[in-house]
Length: 371
Image (cartoon, helix red, strand yellow):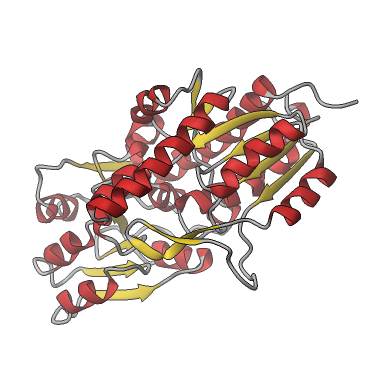
């Protein structure tokens, strides 16, 4: 184990470039949480990303499946001024949008080492949502942008091993499978003891087709004595609310701050994440950090971290959600107590090992720091 004082990256200045707003989606939350804890391990950190408040967008393109999330063009003068003042030793492009490509430009301009990250298969999302012509344009751009970033990277960071072949096909020479960090509040806030039995189940995430929230509503009809809390917003919200209109045990909470998410999880017995597509499933790790087991689709990347297994319950694609929930209802109180403790411990361990892994990877691929 290493700590901040002995970090191999402690003399490095590291700049991140991301097209995601902080905490708006999984990638935005990942780097918001990471930078909040990684700062003591390096000399300095800076992230260049869209500002929450800006007067106008030169270019604004909706993301697949959720037009409330958009790719926007960066202000090149703001970025150039900030990067010149920061003088990075290492640049990381977290996304394949305009900000990510601008990160590559500034890495070359400042003679900094460059690595990129591949967090989300946007091409697969485009196949789910967009019509053929729009999908063709989107995927052509994404494929070319990702190819440029992967070929230019000293290494490419991914969340699970299934993505390794994808980035190698795009030209990555080396890859690193990275862990996922937590926001400090999930570990720091005093725990609320887990209920001895399943009485309330929560979901949190985008209300979009790939999240399979409709399956939760269908299953809720089979368990009128169990409360189902659905946190989040998205393009499917109106449709889902209409489907649940006659169910008194389904409650929509809307978009949640991280503090409200903690309250939602703490008030539940477990978290449910039955997604069709889930690169990792960060909200499941957040639930585990609060001592709540998570029922997560077997295809989610989080299952690739064996140290988390005791806090996770896999949902096979051929099993009905109602059967999986009934299995949880049948478990005795001592099962939930043991699983709750195991989930919390596993989340703490992964968070710490992720910070140490980031410090090692930064030191491994960075150019020597300036004197």
